Length: 304
Image 1: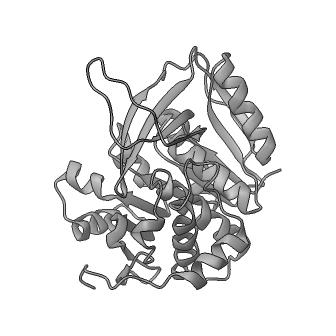
Image 2 (image 1 turned 45 degrees about the vertical axis):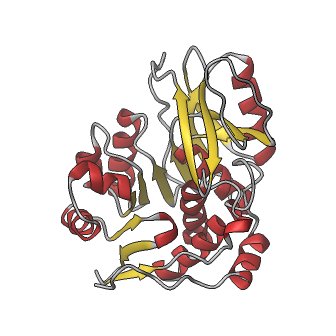
C-alpha cells in the first residue's frame, strides 16, 4: 500500500508559449507547447511520485482518448489511480507570459459514481485541494481521527472550505484566498490557527511565503532568486511545492516544517524553468541542484 493519498480533479493541460495571441481572424505560430496532466492535487501527486514516493490518487477520469492518455501518464509515473467517472476530460489552456500565466478551463465535474472508499490504514499523509468536496471531507475526517497528517492546498475558497479546515494539519493557501475572504495574509494565518491547523501558510509567488511553524511563530520564507531569463512557466509551481513537502514529510519525518518547506521551495524553483507540468517534475538531485544554484531573495514582507 502507498504511504500517501491525494484527492483532486484531473485536467489535461495544454501550455503554449507565444509572443502574442491572435484576435478575430488573425493567426499566429507558437514558439513551443507542452501537453501534460494538470489539476492542483493531481500535479502534486505526480511530483511526489517523481521524487520517489508514488501515492494513491482519487481523481476524475473520462472514457475518451484524453482519459486514456492520462492513464498512461499515471502508469509511467507509478501513480495508482482510484477514479470517479465523468463523461468528458477536463482541459486547461495555459498561456505563460512574463512570469505569470493566463488560464482558460473547460471541465466536467458531473461525477457519475460515488467516490472510492479506501482503507486508510497504511497512509501517513493525505493531501487535498478541495475538489470532490464530499470525498475531501470524508477522508480529512477519517485521517485526522487516525492520526494521519492532513494537508490542504487552499488555492481558493470552495463550498466546504471552512468545515474542511477543521480537519487539516497543514494548510498552504494562495493569496487569492485572502482576497476572497477580505483578509490580510496575517489575518488568514490567524483564521487557520483558529480552525486548528498546526502549520499554516500564505504563498505570494515571487514575494515568498508568510507562514507559522509548530510553535505558532510567524516568519517569511523568501522565494529563491531564479533569474527572470530562466523562468519559462510558473504554472504548476505551487502544486510541485505541495507535492514536494509531502514527500519531504514522508521521507524525513524528523525534520521541522521549515526544512520541508525549504526543500519544496527548491522543487518549485526547478519547475518554473521548464514548460509544462511533466517536464517540470524534479527528482531529489534536481532539488539539491536548485538549492545550490539559487539563493533566497531579500524578502519585502515583514516578519511578524
